[in-house]
Image (tube, rainbow, N blue to C red; front, side, top):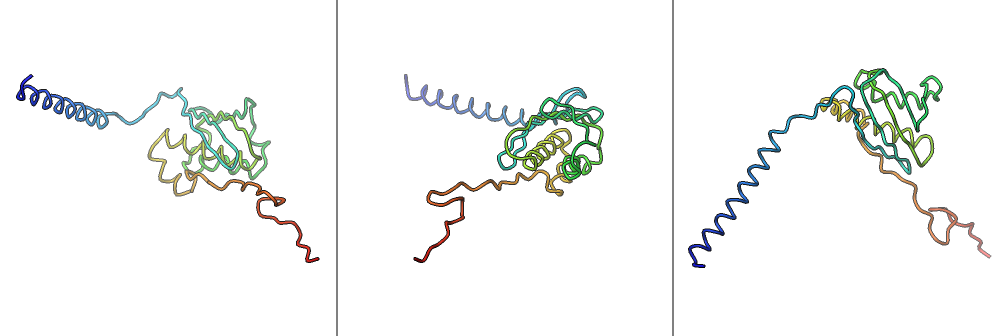
Length: 166
């Protein structure tokens, strides 16, 4: 193989790579915004402390299904109900979606906050324009505070045994 042929093959490889990059860039630009059919679900995950909520949101009439059980919002505690409805109040559409969630771990408040984050993320997937009001309300921010681990030689994370002078 001569030097001229080698240079041509190297140049051909480079141009092929450049063409692939150009094709990828044009494909990324030409992809339309995500629009789903009315019956399709938007699946997201929300987390808080040790709780994890897998949320499926779809257009409907406001039905809530949590861990496979139908939930009447009137039966929930007032603060839990208000917190769960907050993302829908921000976008001003309280009964337009069906919510199915599987929640595990943590206590009732951690599970509630995990569901709120999952619902807010799903609403953002439904309509990208809702991101700004949801973000302003603080619903798209993951609260990263978790329980601190117990340290050796102590009764808890920071608590110490009573000091005895003598």
